[in-house]
Picture 1 (spheres, rainbow, N blue to C red):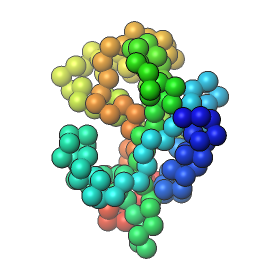
Picture 2 (spheres, one colour):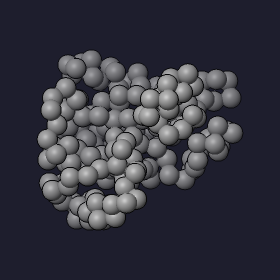
Picture 3 (cartoon, rainbow, N blue to C red):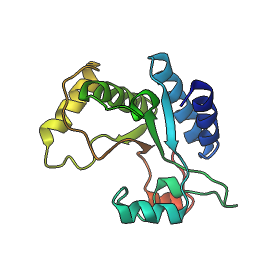
Length: 172
């Protein structure tokens, strides 16, 4: 995606987010750009029909998730994004390139009180989870990591559940 289109795409996707969450995601985009990455919010708000498709295809474990959140008037208020590196999307990703981006994305999300899916599904691989944590703590962006969770580019709040969001609660 060319730069002008990527910027417009991100602006449009930011408009689908709950405003305080939007501010955090915009800050993460700026931070990653300052490091030379080209982050693209691949997906923000998702209809419940699209969520069901994602669930049925195995791309989500939830029939209602943070991507589906709306306000009282039905306005899009997603509390989740999938943020890819536009430079890595259409080429074969090396572990090294992907690891650096995913570690920096996760570190940026953590600084803003958010979490990513970098460790999801790694319950049977505690050493992989530990290695990710050590790399982030030490700022070792070039760590030799071979395993990541099943949705590492997904960002969401950590102080609320999807069901609470569905009921109208919003993150602090």
